[in-house]
Image 1 (cartoon, rainbow, N blue to C red):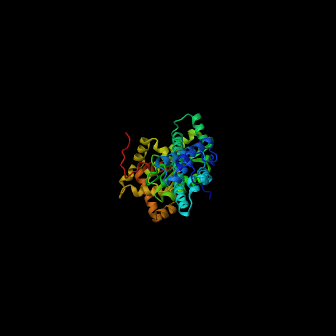
Image 2: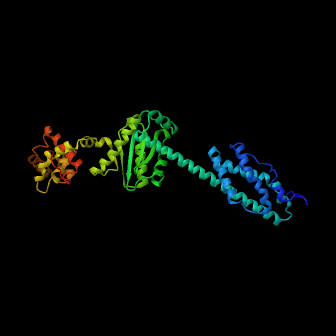
Image 3: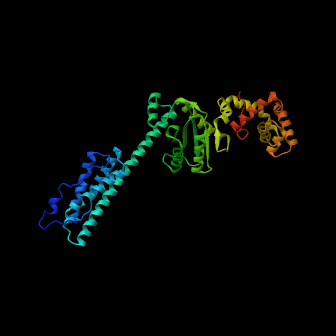
Amino acid sequence: MPRRKNGQNAAGSEADATVPGVAAPVGSGPPAASALDPYLKRLVGISTSRERLGEHELEGLREVAAAAAGRGTALTALVSEYLDSACRVWGDLPDTRRAEDHEGVTAVVSALLRAVADATVALTEGYETAHRAAIRGEEATRREFVDDLLEGRTDLGRLAERAERFEFRLLGPHTVAVARAASAFGAGDPATHYVEEALTTRFAAREVLTTTKDGLLVCVSRGTGPDVPEAFAAAVGDAVGDQHQLAISRPRRGPGGIVRSYQEARSTLDLAAQLGLSAPLVHAADVLVFQVLGRDRAAITDLVATVLGGLEQARGGPQPLLNTLTAYFASGCLNTATARRLEMSVRTVAYRLSRIRQLTGHDPTDPDQRYILQTAALGARLLDWPSQPIQPAD
């Protein structure tokens, strides 16, 4: 190692000297070079004083790294250039030349390594902090876009422009799936993050959007196929276990269709809870009849009270006969299949159907009267009758 002759300038004047070998970080340009230059020059004084970098200096390095992150410079490039520059100036640091024995060299090396290590940590901290902030900002912008998309709060031109930023195509049909779990979904929580990672790993950004809304997890997918909704359902199940339920809308076209599909998926989820459906996955098309009936509650209430009200005269109340009626329709109006479903004899099924005809005046075995009874039975489920009493309309 080259040594400086006795009588050369002291460290105090050398600290302000120009440091050879300082270059700009890769991809950052001259501004970053001038930003890092003072911290490389600082090694001159540290080689003599053995002091550590001050907190204000470390904070300055964090700011340099944050600025580099904002320009898109890679962290590896930034740290590599700082370390390379530190190596290049090593031979010209005053005490690396002045040290005359092993102990002197060791002291200089220890001080410089400590300074370089502290600087590297500060650069990494500043970069990662800026990177996390950028990610949070991007996620917030994305959530705002999806919220506006679901609510239909923005004009189509502006919405299409924002969708292009996230590479999501608004043209064509879209399907919306909504998930509810025992614990509300929140932006950035582990379950939400798991589902988002599962979908983004498998599907392109233009095919799927996810967000949290009112404690629900929402997935908007392009097309009419089941791939994304099924993957969404599987990921939610993996993330939260059995305590969840999903509703999937029918596909609709364009931004307006997304709004309608979202509303349909939410109402389907609420309807499934109201009806006590235990299936983890409910398709809106499967409960469409309930949604139609529910649009005129007064009419369906009147229908249930008028058609099925007579069942209240049955011994044991209306529920056993109503269960038989529901099973009978679900079994294709076959007595044998109904008996298997209810785990009773065919004779008992026939007796109950006869009692229903006597008490309601409508024969479930008559094709002309069957539809009235079936519609009334669906309405009873929607109104939670007979658990909840109803009064016929005036």
